[in-house]
Length: 637
Image 1 (cartoon, rainbow, N blue to C red):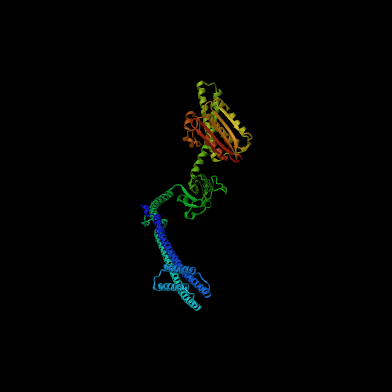
Image 2: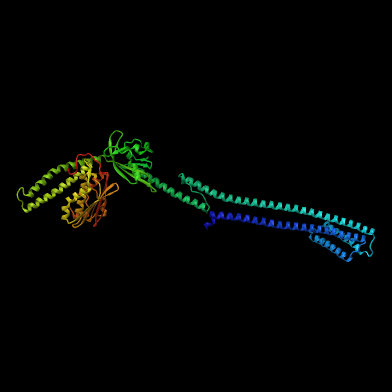
């Protein structure tokens, strides 16, 4: 039923009405023109036929006169004429004249007395003229010349009278033709005027119908437009009042439904915005939002307090890099071409780092800033910066590191003494020990060794975290470095009957590295591979070049790491649950240490592991080598 009221149906019906009206007018016009054309053609043909018959009568009148005059001349000259032949010719001429007169009568369409009188006079004169022409042939005796001249004179008079009658009839016919033409012209004018009136009426009706339909549609569309403008301006108080059931009515109903949904959505958004503002203001962390042009669009109160900003509104629309100048964690100026927020925006990945910020009063705070890009439709639209003041945490961490470093350093002396005295006991320097005493002494020695390793690891980590490690890069042959470490571990691989394969890319140039630091990376990775691979297992080391990077790979087919624990791999003191049951000896600090070494050298480390199948570690270093750094100590020093 709805289709009956559709806009398309209304337009089709209006078009069909106009088309039907135009068609009817066109048919009427064609019929009128055809009728008039037939009538006019008949009139013209009839008139010309009548004129033709009158002209024929006049022609035969002249021929009859000439025939009679010829006979009179022949008789006057005494010549003998063929009366029978002449009478036959004369009769034929008279009959032709009568036929033409009869045809003229038949063609007459006006039965008026004047017309009948005219044709009667012509007919009578024709008979008189014929009788005079035949009277010559009826003479038994050749008439005298005087008689012939009298007859001839009478013939001339009758012929002139007949000619006058014919001329009058022809003039009358021409007058009637002109009158008929004038009537035809008048009829043509009437038909043209009538067609113009019909065409104008049809056009006016079509225009009126079109304007009516357009007005109805425009009125409904204007209501929809006004309603849409109200909705666009946030006014949801009134709905669009369109009662039609066509597409415009459906569109209005759709707008009304959309307005209701938008009103509900705006209400929800207003509540959510209010809630978000409350949450932002109550956050313990500072928050700054910037757009894709790097301009500040939002600052919460905690950020303003943390950064010592009195009026937040002055920051709105200002470039972040001009309003928030930060330094690296060592309070050194950042590269002028580097913007952490822009790097997060361009890279599309969050960036977290430690920065130093100078307050207006001159005091400094240490900030942990996380910059998370915000995307829309696959394009980054801005960055949300979460700022946390970690000054106190860094101080505590530094104190903790210093304490660990001091404690570790102080513990090394007594541990070394314990190790030395235990070795003397085992060697018998203090006298021969019993088997039970020897077992005790060996246990003490093993525990002391583990304690020394733990203290060394803690000490190395504290040195790395404090930045006191000295980096002294020199051209290093990777083949020699790896082979030397493998040789140092050969006793362990032989003991566990493991096959260790080393492959270093041929033609690999020497790379500027700190052999002590990078050697520690290879040592820890290989030690772990040997420790966590069952006896008879396979271990491989591959070193190759990939573009501008030096890539090392250490693979084993040992116990592997459970997938659920992969994210903990490089955390301090982490040991996988499955290997901790098999190998109880370990500190969980080795991977944390080598990750710190690699990242401080400008490289990166990653891994793949599957429980029960083994683990593969990769780490990359730039072919350009490590950058030298002054420091106070080296590893294990």
